[in-house]
Each structure stands twice: as structure tokens, then as C-alpha cells.
Length: 203
Image 1 (spheres, helix red, strand yellow):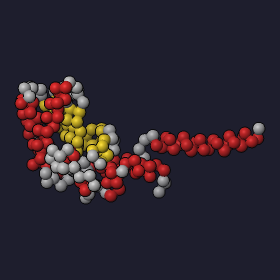
Image 2 (cartoon, rainbow, N blue to C red):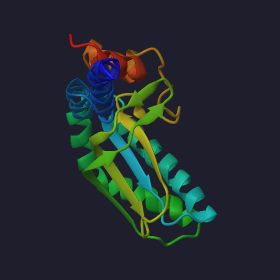
Image 3 (cartoon, helix red, strand yellow):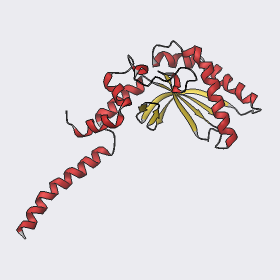
Image 4 (spheres, rainbow, N blue to C red):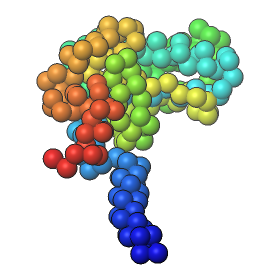
């Protein structure tokens, strides 16, 4: 009986530690949250929302995306920061909408388009070699029609969307060099390794 009691006393702290580690891993650590805030402050994203999930609307969404990126290429090609990119985009919101409408007109569609800068919640998303953590980001949001279909995301600054539509993808971290700290660059290039380090090492 005493042996069983000793076993229980030994097992309880172990189980509590395992349970605590599980809870700690259930959400982002304080370090991860700090890195997300740093990253979000230096990134401008593009968010194109389709009218619906019909095949036609989804195809039009991608064509609108391409038209917008083509229009934004000369606008953002030499932007030096996320803040400057936001300012330039804000000054050209009318042109963004017109570029989208032009694409829709060519598709014989009269759906309305609204473009605006907004702060939105994004889930964790991988672009090529980069994985941006979930959280709030500044974004150029373009809604087509009712805006009830699946959306399309990319990064306008830095790297300009990683699609090759504006600039080729850089997969060795250079797109973020000089924009993010070395720790933040490591976080988006190797998110799983960084999370394990933050959650299990107290230093």
C-alpha cells in the first residue's frame, strides 16, 4: 500500500508537468507573439475575396488578382518599407478598383469592387519557404461583389506576393533581410524549430 502511495506521489508531479507543457504548447508563447507583432508591422498583405465559390467567380478572382498585381507593380517596385507601401496603396485605391473592374468588364461581369486598407486576422500561411504566423496584419482588401467566396492571400511587401507575377520568389531569406531581425527571419523560415525552442527552453 505504501509503495502504491509513493508511486502516486511520484507520478502526480510528472503528470502535472506533462499537462502544463501541453497547455503551454496549445497557443503561441510570449516570444512568438512578440515576433508576430514585429513581422506584422513590417508586412503588407493582399487579400482578394471572390463574389462566391462558383467556378466562374473563383476564376474571375484570380484574373482580378493578376490585374491588380500588374497595376501595383510600378507603384510598389521601389517601396522601402511597409509604411511607405501602405501610403502608396492608399493613394491608388481608386486605380486598384478600376484595374479590377477592367478585368471584370473583359469577363462580361458588372460585379462591383471595393478596395480598402484594413487590419485583418490571418491564419498561419506558408508562401514558398516562408511561413507567416497567425495574427493581425495590415492588408489591401479587395472584395468582388458580395465577397462571400473563398479568398486569395499574398504578401505585397516585402517580396510582392511570391507568385512571380511581380517579382521572382526569393527562398533564402533575402526578401526579409534588412526588414526583419535575424530572429524574426529565422521564425518565418523555420517556424517549427523556433516554436519548439521557445516552448521548451527557458532561456
